[in-house]
Every structure is written in C-alpha cells, then in structure tokens.
Image 1: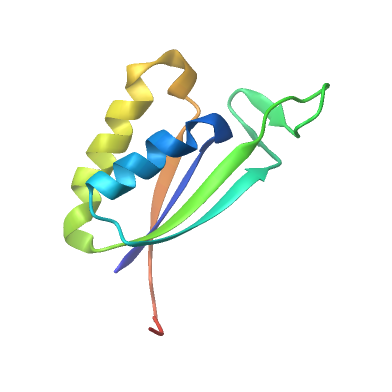
Image 2 (image 1 turned 30 degrees about the vertical axis):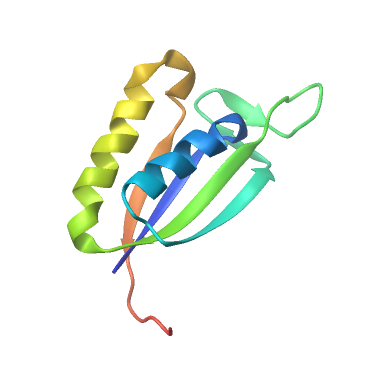
Length: 97
C-alpha cells in the first residue's frame, strides 16, 4: 500500500474525488478549505489572499498508482486553472486496519 497526497484548489474537489472513484480508491481523507501557498501564490481564504486549498491523502494499492497518476496528469494539463495540482506518493511503513 502507498499513500498518495494530492493538493489542489478547493473548487476542484468533486472532480478529483471522481478521479479517485473511477480508479476504485476506497480509503482517503480530505482536508477541505485549508490555507496554503502554491505556484499561484497564497490562498488564505480572505480578500487579500483569496481561495483555499484542499489536500486528499489516499491509500492506494501499488498496482493502481500509475493509472491514478495518469488520470491526475490528464486533469492537470486539461486547463491552465488546473496547473496548481500536485501529487506525491509515499511508502507506508506500517498499517493498522
């Protein structure tokens, strides 16, 4: 099992969750509307720094990583507004289920 962390502008949450669903990713947590900074600047949810970021951490079987990355890459390059999306994969040392 791997842990994939995906960060993106909060308004694309439904689209990213649909990508997870289409890849049959069953376990994830979502941190909605958090403050952060990305390639577009600061997003603190106020008038000076509008917008917020969402982070999803998903448990992904190794055999699904490549397909999920391909779908996220396709989303990222589809529109200029999607360019801020970032994803990374981390190993899971131990897991309690």
